[in-house]
Amino acid sequence: MQNPSILNLQQVKQFQVRRPQITKGSPLLKGNQVQIAANIRNQSLLSDQPQHLKIKQQEEQELGMHNQFERRIQKQNQFDIKQQDNIFQLKLSNEHQLNQLNMQLIKKNKILSNRLQQQYKINESYLEQINKLQETNQAYESQIHQLEEKIKKQKSKKKQLKEQIDQLQQELDEMQEKYQNNSNQDMNQEDDQQQQQQQNHIPLTRQQLYQLMQYLYQGDQQQLENFHEYQDQEIDPDAMTYEQLLELEEQIGNVPKGLTKQQIKQLPKRTLDHESMPEDKCSVCLFEFKEEEKVRELPCKHIYHSSCIKNWLQNNKQCPLCKTEIEIQINDNEEQLNQQDEQDQGDEPQVEQDQQRFEIE
Image 1 (cartoon, rainbow, N blue to C red):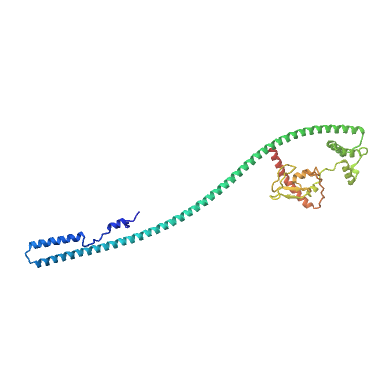
Image 2 (cartoon, helix red, strand yellow):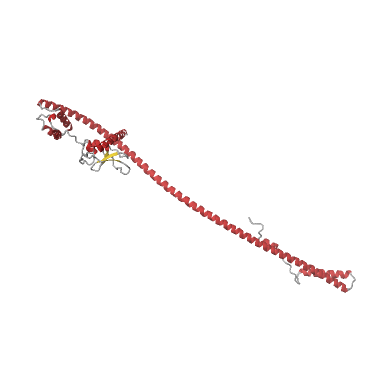
């Protein structure tokens, strides 16, 4: 809003009073002279005074009028000077106020510009944060999409595994049926052979008969040939020495095909952690390895669950994967072996639970 004390140039011009210029040809001077002349004529007509008195009175009147006119002019000049001074003071005050207003406006403009710059920087930071959030959202969306794809693949794999399990179960049932049939046939063959041996009157011990039944059941022709070396002579195990019994057992085939418990205990055993986790599964139970599980490592560097490889090596001397023959020397440190045996017994229930869970699934 404009300050009412500030006057524009047009208003200032209205207050300016022009000083009357009195010259010989000005209308103001002519009017005074006419008035003076009229007064003189009136006085000459009204009075019968002498001529010089009349002239004197006229001069006095003219002088009074002239003085009065001079006083008016002086007053007018003084008024004009005061008016001009007032106008000049108004101009100065107006200019001063304008300068102050300009300075205030400049300061306000600077403040507003600073605020705008700060707001612009804040907006830029907000935009950067929004862009980062959008990028993180896109990354999360891609991760979610990848996880969904993995879930789909896992579901398909689970379905395939279930089909494979059903197929393997069917094959297992068939194999069990065949095994049962073969066992029945083997039992019949054993009965026939026993009858034939009784007819030939070949003296055999119970142990030899049991060995013969085992090898007939397993179908090991080489062991049968070794056994036929002793069929013509009667053997008394009670009268034989320990070395002779071992030699007889090796020739007949009674020695177990796998490793002994002491030999199995000599295999290096350790507990799995996050860094030493194998990538493959256990080839015996087909379960993945977990942390804090006990495992054993064969000389061929293949790793298995402790209980799984223990059961395997009791019947086999080869690695389940590479079929490498395992040869282990027995260590005399019995205390360490007993501790490992106790740990193996503690690990077996956990593996059995995992196998049961796998069968349920």
